[in-house]
Image (cartoon, rainbow, N blue to C red; front, side, top):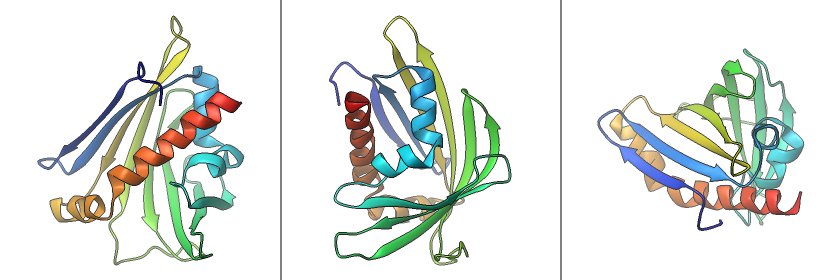
Length: 167
């Protein structure tokens, strides 16, 4: 990450959320595409050394992104994101879950309601992505944090920096 770019990561236990503000060295259109197109998401979403593999993506309200995070040992950890609201080039909200390869939601793990908002700074040719990851309970939030959410998501966002630097 370039040191001049915004990066804030805050855990709010009172309302069971993780708030992330992350600025990227790319214009709004390029940043939006990186978050909404599977061929780009597959290049950065998983923390290294994991790899993201999209099985299917239907980026529309009511659609789903079904993907796996593949470990170096060839273990597949399946996830899905059910898209709830989309305002093109501005924001989208989705309900993320661990699942099986067919998209059946795991009842053992909490779901995450993601709201991602994109704001372009044309003077700097950067885009700020404001992310709210919300959980149903403090217990759910703490479970995700204990699994290494902050470290893994920070690594993935660094992968996105690398993607922008090279594309």
